[in-house]
Amino acid sequence: MTIRNFLFHRVSEDQDSMWPPMTPRLFESIVAKLSKNYFVVPLESFLKDTKMFKTKREIATILFDDGYKDNIEIAAPILKKYNCPASFYVVTDCINKNIPTWTYILDNIFANTSTTHLSLEYDFAPDHLKSIPLKMSGRGNELVKQIKPWLKNLSNTKRLVVLQSIEEQCNDVPTPSGKMMNWNDINELATEGFIIGSHSHTHPMLASLEDNGEIESELKISGQIIQENIGSFPDTISYPIGSYDSRVMEIAQKQGYKYGLAVEQRFYNYDKDSLFCIPRVELYEESKWKTSLRMNGLYSVLKRYVGRK
Image 1 (cartoon, rainbow, N blue to C red):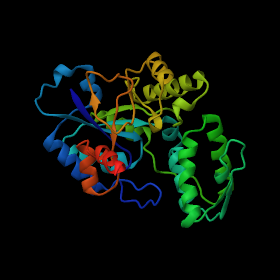
Image 2: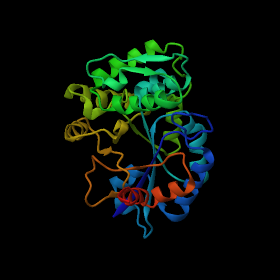
Image 3: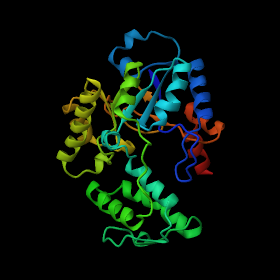
Image 4: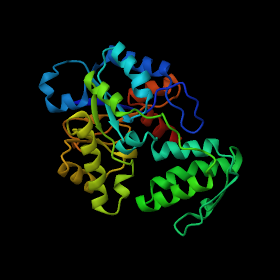
């Protein structure tokens, strides 16, 4: 049985040169298409009891990571308009402090700082990233775009050191506030029938954490905070940035989670894939034809074909 799990983050008209959110118009067109052509189910409810969802139609799910304010202000009303269920996986530290994830903060800094030069003189930094001109054209722009992928592959300890340095050097950009849902918002979603899950406590690359105790802490604290605020421990951990390994899956299960979500740009094979590495297809703000190819599972096939030419 194939299940099409579609992942979203932000739905907004906000302009963002580093990470454009999906426009409400595109999101609504996707939801309308899914509700017409698929049987859209709440993922966790389906996994708990597949017999409850008897259908000959193909199955799809709608899933959100992070916990942005526009999820309840813009996405939820569209979902309710089409009677579509969805699951929302929140970063509990971001909800508690009302600050976005570190990936958003980093993008925001580079988009808005007036600082002209960034120095990352660490022995673990590649030579070409140790001294970076911060300008939005030419070589500077290309180097800036390489910083986040590099950070994603560092250990959590090193990543935090570099992030602190970047924030100190670009201290003219305040940390954005008001971008995240609060617990009242999340309770409202839960009351309306949407599912709430964990996206960790601080949004680290879980597989990059060297200490298993750090992984345990991220998953345990997040689950406990959600339980304290909505009344039940979450069934699902959505791995931040899709980062997981065998350790993460094992620890997630021991902490009481029933499902783990990855990001692998492929559909979920219910009969073969593990419940702790369930793949999702991420959808972006892009042309409708690209979105359609992703939704049909053809975009990655086309990219591989073109790459051989």
